[in-house]
Image 1 (tube, one colour):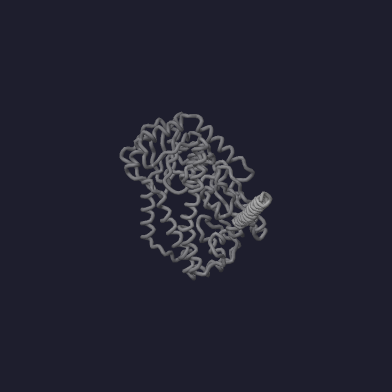
Image 2 (cartoon, one colour; image 1 turned 60 degrees about the vertical axis):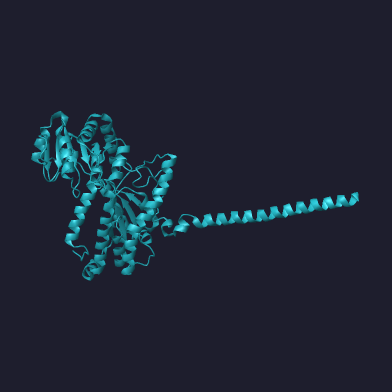
Amino acid sequence: MKHKDLLTSEDVEASIKEYSRLGVTGQGHKIFDIVVRGITSSCEGIFQDGDLLRAMRSLKADLILGDGYLMCPALVAEHLQVPFILISFTPLISYQAVTYRIPNPLSYIPEMSSGYTDKMTFFQRTWNVILHFLLSTYLDRKIVEPFNAIKEKYNLSTETSMQGKLGKAELRFFSTDFSLEFPRPLTPNIVLVGGLLTEPSKPLPQELSDFYDSAGEAGVVVVSMGTILSLRSDTTDVFASALARLPQKVVWKLEKAPSNLGNNTMVMPWLPQNDLLGHPKTKALVYHGGLNGVFEAIYHGVPVVGIPMQGDQFENILRITVKGMAIKLDITTITADTLYEAIQTICNKKSYKHNAKRLSDIHRDQPLHPLDRAVFWIEYVLTHGGASHLRPAGLDQPSYQYYLLDVLCFFVFVIFLLMFFLRIICRFLCISCQTFKINKSRLKFEKEI
């Protein structure tokens, strides 16, 4: 089912090229504008397409499962008068915590892009607070305001803000868990489903199986830098030079082989990544840090050389680096030597494999697979006609009540009032003392006369 997207195919192609260019040159933060422009355009296109809306209404859906990073599913759900669940394929970042009123103590919850862990010094905590308010303001302007404009333009919601509308979600899924995430408090309507796509590995295709058999004891390194972002030719040459020096065999997801490709490296345009990571001869994953691949590495206990380029990749790689199963490299400063040394360290230092295995054990030790848990909660909402009994009352409070600003103002007023009366009493006592002294002095003077 298609709709009248406001972006032409030429716009999309140009956006993908720009997206790729920014990512591989260390300007991943600028990708944000491209993404928001695309999703707001697509959302507006839905509400301009009367045929699509009529077709959606005719389906008489019982529930909408939408991307929690986008705000369009909430608008569509209210327009169709259907309950909805939102799922985010990112770490549980502070901005989302604020939007969904999840407890978010900035004393130990690091802000996105801060580079901090849950153990911060005084000055880091100070900057974490400042960064939180700066980013919240920025993201409100970049994400919330465009969707508020769509909401008002098409008269889509009775809520005064998009935050209020998003708070009506029956449940909120986050594709993470505490094998990856820093420990933090959660509300009952939050469900962690990290590792949705993880599964036991299947036998490899014959070509890859033969290649693995030829690897010997040294094993194999898997290299995958994603689908959308394409490495520049000079960066590809750096990678090829480093990989050619490895004693391990290498399987590299790449469209076109560089001229300096080593004899130990097999290049393929697509890889069965989960099956490769589950193979006992896989020693390491060189990866950009997308969440699904990170959880596949955790599930199979494979250490990672992380080279993030945009978005949540930095946060994902930060977390597994802190937990001791990864080494992080900078795409803008990477050299053949630094890449080679990082891979050798990951392959030869036992602590990385040990920590990866420990996180794998933690991730796997749960009563339900994440996909089964998500299915259970979706059916739970359908069975009970919603999950309003799990929604904290704070979701319906205005900000001044939720953050107790009214209580704070009351206390400030009471303190001010007490100080005011104390000042009056003190002045009265001072004047009384002065009057008493004057009268006493006058009386003494009169007696002397």
